[in-house]
Image (tube, rainbow, N blue to C red):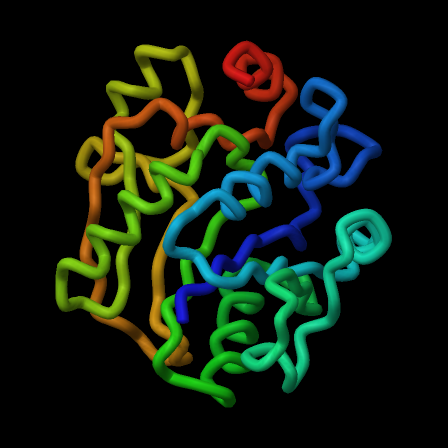
Length: 210
């Protein structure tokens, strides 16, 4: 099964807003809603799980009360519902990732998990499916997606880290096993991948493309 894991449990301190980052409004629509809508249009993703934490309690309430998400439990694979939330401790990306993999591994080692940050509103279903199709065409169990620094420079978007001229996009694919996995790198020159909304400046820029 191909499952989208939306990481929405961070504190979002760089955005400097009283509103939790997944709920930060872009054109009067919560940031995370763009991500969820894009996932819903994917032809390959079968279910969506949003990782929440005590850092963002309003995000969890929004998922439950406004979008009808249900708690991830033993009924996940048999349920007709495709939208779930999963509680994490919110202690950091690595810790939360390990917890998520542990939970899925206890149920199946055959799932494909595509991890997407909740702050990537421009990444449409076409890009998600392009990434997944590439993943399915090769043999390594893990995939990381990066964007050339030239794309960031062209659009005037800052980045905090680059390696060999490429910047991590916030999208990764792993098998549902809590082990170190051999990783393939995919480099995509798509501007939609560079607008991760974690500052006011990036939010203003992103609004122009929505």
